[in-house]
Image (cartoon, rainbow, N blue to C red; front, side):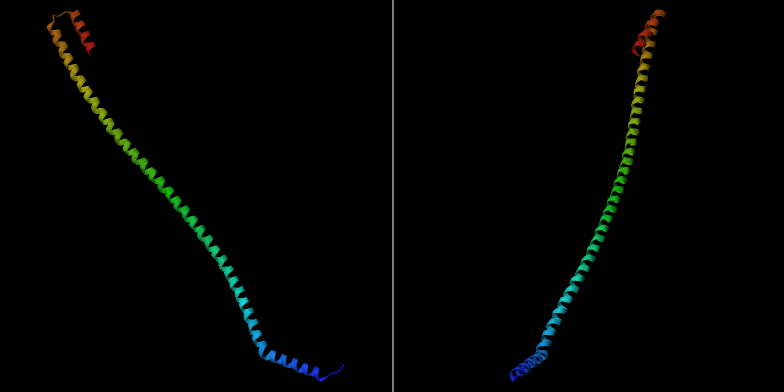
Length: 156
């Protein structure tokens, strides 16, 4: 193998190129690659944090939804209890009002019955007086008395 000057010149040039590249170009490339790797790592870390935040938010949303449903059920149960209470109060008020109306009606009926009895007494008294007057005007005759009493009895 012949080593000539051309080969040595090429080797020196290659060594100078490698030295120049390692001294001036390589640090910039290395820095760009490190920055890129750091950017990718930061992006992956941010994505992982975002995924965890999403899971946490989903759990919180589920908890809030569960609490809202529970509160809604409590409100509905309270409303049902209040409705039942209102119905019971209305039943009691209606029963009281019905009893009051019934008592008023009974009192009115008793008054009407009393008035009717008084009117009947007055009429019976008038009939008795009229009958006695007719008996006294006639002569004392048993058959006439019996006929007269039958007539009075028919009028009653």
